[in-house]
Length: 626
Image 1 (cartoon, rainbow, N blue to C red):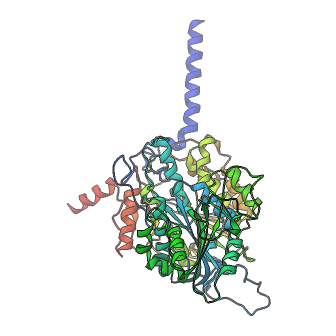
Image 2: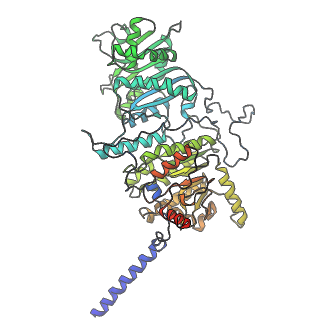
Image 3: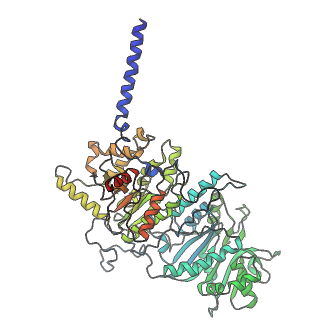
């Protein structure tokens, strides 16, 4: 009897081992076959961060984030042959009116809005975008800062480093940096010199940058500049109206400010003269462009007299004294957390740091998003294309140094062809609370953005566009030609997903995908989300879930696989040849060094051949040379 029990127990153990082996069999040997898992989106999350991110080292100073898209706002049908996105049919009565959404290409704007903001004030910038400019998210960026008559830019100051402070741990500060870099990738509305400035100098530096760098660099003209802190809730429409009414008939100039007064009086602020009202801190101002140029020309003289004030406060007192420019110093409301007694006639309320306060204040003083900037949907919305990527930076900041330059690479490619550019981080961050690896956020991000476009071209953060002239419609045309050549029942089926499988890999690489907005693709990615087995299966995750799903007969009709194709749309460095479209760096460690090296070579007009070669490739080249 004991022997039989031993045999039964042994048999049970063997049976369980066999079951486990069957479940794991498809993937246990992938490493031995040279398959590169989905480490690319993991960004070497346990690897050393790259460049200047340790203790006392110089922090990385990112470049200006992106370029202005000067292409026509009407986006192309990705497959339309010979489409010219600069041609617009304005006379055909059958063509829907596009006047509400076509971008301003004249180069002339009424207003440039400059918003100084500390780099940590991410939420404040979000509130400003939503309440003042009507921008709730970046799902349809649509070049909002080019519409109508208004441009805006955040002038962000401070040094984005993570050192332990008296209030926060180093880990907390790193989280702030990661979120801030994601914001800069997602919204092309930030200028960030990454330098520490005091309150008195920030406004002067911001206005100097706007007048002497941004406006000339963009080759535009503006009539006036509005400036306010990101902690100020402003009714910009009424501010502009007040300034318009105060403008001298002889156009001699105007400085109109809103701030906190040091005057101790019971007289209503509207009745105070400039001699009675002395603004100690200016929260907002409206200044004609010619007046601002004059202020900046006399900046040294103005600030010498009042070095502790910001440039606009000092200028208001300077010109009020000499009388050559009209000065109006109005009062803003100091926010004391009492919404009931807040005057509904207030135009500026500051400082505000809580969302629970921001939106009630906005409603109380009648803030409305500028119609000249708020997006009006394209009536032909289905004919739109976006280049999409991740803006999520993993703990450790591996891709911190490369995130902005590589986003600029993708943004420039999109702008060249009239595509939108969308980057997302929120869907990756939420995976921490869903029991899955962060890389699964890629699927959620695609699902969220897909309904807004006809085609979505996904690229991992560490993928670099090399051939800027290649159009996405060429990928569709090649896929359709290959499918037609194969014949059979699938030849006439619509293609909704285009991916590539490297020759030596056992499955597709999901780092580059072209997805069409169809019922098939929406259902396909919903099905991928259900593959729980791969939620934390290192290192394949969502990539294996896509591979498993697309190989099932029920889904075969919608996928085209460039099988064993190293060059059409997704090329690893070891296989790169001059002329390839995209090089995808997916090393065992952090991808930032080869990504930055490749971007530098592209900027210098050099080939990226050899950048990011694996040790195996280098050894093979040495062996061949000998």
